[in-house]
Amino acid sequence: MSLRDREAAVRRILERRPPPVPPDLCAAAVRRGGRMLRRRTAARHLMWLVLAAAVVAFFVWALMARPWVEPPSTTTPPMTGW
Image 1 (cartoon, rainbow, N blue to C red):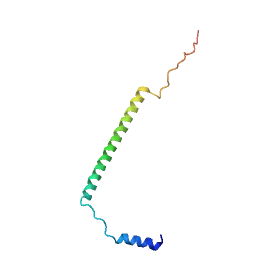
Image 2: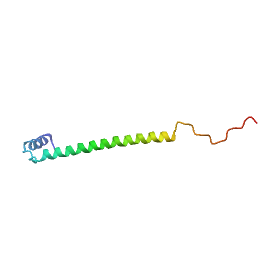
Image 3: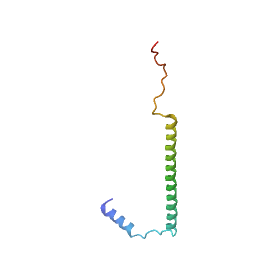
Image 4: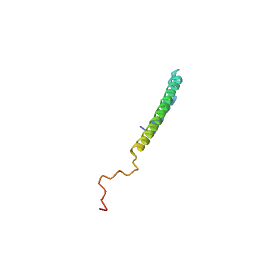
């Protein structure tokens, strides 16, 4: 396809009458946008709730397991002084 053919095709497309827009398109877009915002907000709240629960669970585990404390020795200490 040559440059002239492409230009002619583009001009034909641009000269055509645009397709009619449905009358309820704006209302449908507003409804869909509102629904998307509500879902996104709910997902964000759920994410923060899960994150808070994970932090609380980690702190409870850390307080119960105390991973910073050295575990007790499993061997008997040497006997001295007999």
